[in-house]
Amino acid sequence: MRIIIFTGKGGVGKTSIAAATAVKLAKEGKRTLILSTDAAHSLADSLAMPIGPDPVQVTENLWGQEVNSLRETENNWGAVQDWLTTMLDKAQLKDITTEEMLVFPGMEELFSLLQIKKHAQSGQFDVLVVDCAPTGETLRLLSYPNVLNWWLEKIFPHERRLIKLVRPVAKLVNSIELPSDGVLDSIERLARSLEDMQRIVLDQEMTSVRIVLNPEKMVLAEAKRSFTYLNLFGFNTDAVIVNRVLPDEAGEGYFSHWRSLQKKYEEEIKVNFQPLPIMKAPMMQKEVIGLEILEELADIVYGKQDPSAMLYFGRTETIREEGEEMLLELTIPFVDKTDLDLTQTGDELTVDAGAYKRKVILPRPLMGRQVTGAKYAEDRLVIRFGGKNL
Ligand SMILES: Nc1ncnc2c1ncn2[C@@H]1O[C@H](COP(=O)(O)OP(=O)(O)OP(=O)(O)O)[C@@H](O)[C@H]1O
Ligand SMILES: [Mg+2]
Image (cartoon, protein in one colour):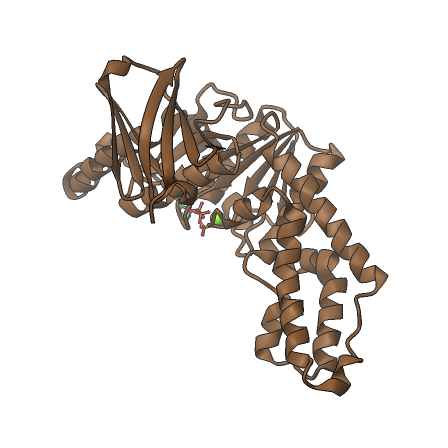
């Protein structure tokens, strides 16, 4: 089983690239499921085929599924939700604001993503292609070291708050029901599913993430941030796909300025994402809708490469703690270390080594720390950050 997760800012072409990848895989004989976990589905439009909340066969070897997040939330969380609702009801606290306690941002997509676990465990497909909602938040939720704690922390502050609110009204205190065994089982089952899920998506042999972006300033800024966090949380990012690149012939006249801007950002993309493979998807001549043009797009992106191959292996950035210090380790395939130069501006670190340049957005644990040293050996640059300077 191979799982490929496509992520990127809104509108960059995640659905199109994910669908193109899936179409090509199916064509090559792999039993492929493309799974849309974005509540605002557009997979059916992209494939120009009706698709349902369970896998629907689209063509030979290809299935599509647009997860129904409400159904998944009900299945996984319904019992707990009912209990919370009853509590709120009894405490006569049910209004719009308390209803808000029953959900939290990202919750529905998280339940949708549990479908990944289901399919990974069923063994029904060779490849699972996941088209995510436009945010890296969900990946972050999944990657917490202890999902259960995270979960309980999310839920129980609300419960505690609720009890605090109710406590002064003595007669109501007795009416607060402790969660039944059914509710507790439900929480436990869910916590276990999330842990399984976390193991699957962080399994470097099985799962990789591909970042889709456009050669544009704001899209690039967001992609850089997500790349840093994907690395930080231990996901294996194995490729970057630059979508909507204007071909030279289209970049003349009216669009010539756009073409030169894109060229500039393509360079920036190299500096930020190497040594990951960077693939290009051109701005197509027609709307990217339907199997035929999706396959054409995938052929350009992957060429002779197998889209299900692990296109890069091993993380390009890792962070670890050593006493008071933090170490940032970068894979940098070069160079003469005498050339090495580091500059830190705000949350961005630039590594210059002769002709080679690499930029890294520093994640939160490294912000406010000063570089105290750096060492380069065997393709790895280890940068030391001192204690926090607030
Ligand atoms: N390479 C391309 N050439 C031409 N049109 C494209 C290309 N890639 C995507 N598009 C078009 O751009 C639009 C947005 O693409 P798509 O839906 O794949 O983006 P998305 O990142 O999934 O968006 P969302 O964040 O809303 O889910 C679609 O109309 C699609 O057909
Ligand atoms: Mg989409």
